[in-house]
Length: 144
Image (cartoon, one colour):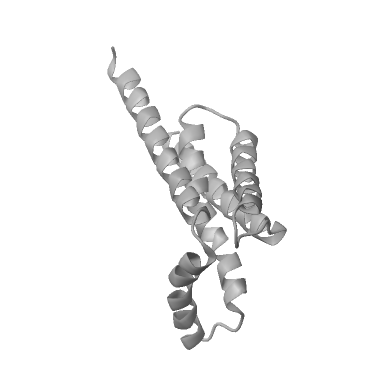
């Protein structure tokens, strides 16, 4: 087995582990009760409020979907780009993960489907994928 193939196989394995961890983290957050998620978000809300954030705790919690899905987007991008997936498939996979996450909440007591949260999920995926594509393009330019 040549060195390039070993590196490629290692990158693919690492990307699968990173993606699995990101999906499990989102599932962990989704399966929490309303009081558990409030316990996580309320101290953050208080800090933001002390530093000038003007908005409700619900708005902050909704906006928290952007960084949550940004990390999923990084993991999906890493997974997809080492496998030469087209960016649109990475974006679609991320959007479907967000949709599945929101849909799962329909079946959980004290949780609900929120279209606005899904939009925040997609924004996080788009930002992460865009960052990865910019880095990939910069790497190509530096090699040539």
